[in-house]
Length: 372
Image (tube, rainbow, N blue to C red; front, side, top):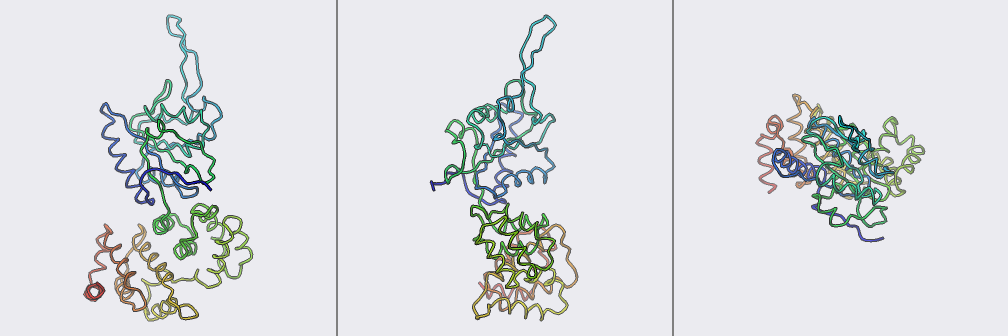
């Protein structure tokens, strides 16, 4: 396998969105000037969610969005449009190009996504250079305040891509998307992905990003099993579905995950709404050890992360006993102090004042001081 070639700083989906935000804001400021905005290319291995991330970015801001996949273009006309002969009042004939139907016609803000740009034929790729440089092709141009984002797979690593030369590369800014299980889980919670699948990824993040086990294929698999209430009683069909979407190691790991009853890890809402926290405490103490008495910090880490995602989700509402139960969770002896500190710091970063009020407790303050 040849060396993977990617460009720009590496970051997860949250970090990449921050980069996009900075570049786009800068681009919007120069639209009225003589400078031209700069496109950005997001590199990354297959199945990471590059396309979905850009579409979500536009949707979150109410921006317009257009998508093209130049690998599907067979002729240059698919890119720059078809020629038409126009005759003026004096009978002079001129050839003009009618824009293809994918070209946006309304003023932005908007994003034109050129997906998998380096999977296009070399002719098409070279034809994109003027679009990237001038935001126009032949006799048409992108409307006011439209931005261009491209995605690309790495060069090398057996990817069937068309290498981009320096003339193409220097027309864009570059960044590389990497997988972050916590950032993925945050997206998955908002998108309604099966909670058992989220727990699996948080427990075994090292399985993600093989040739067949990617965030995309995992999301497909979790969608398939969402209607199966009892996974343990249906392991045969669950394994078949897993093998249809994931590699063998990931599929067998998920079955082990099910057989160990880890899909039954305590739900965040159960922790926060419990009327008898001693039962929660016993369950967590049991989960913190395996059958041989070895520490299972990974399980507690999964539960802690899911608790954070639940509390910070837009749909979360603080109920009467939530604050008290959250403090009791922080003070659990079976919970490693680094997980407690990480949860506290993450919640403290929230912009929600009510969440920050939940952390104002003398017991928690004393515990954090002792833990430092």
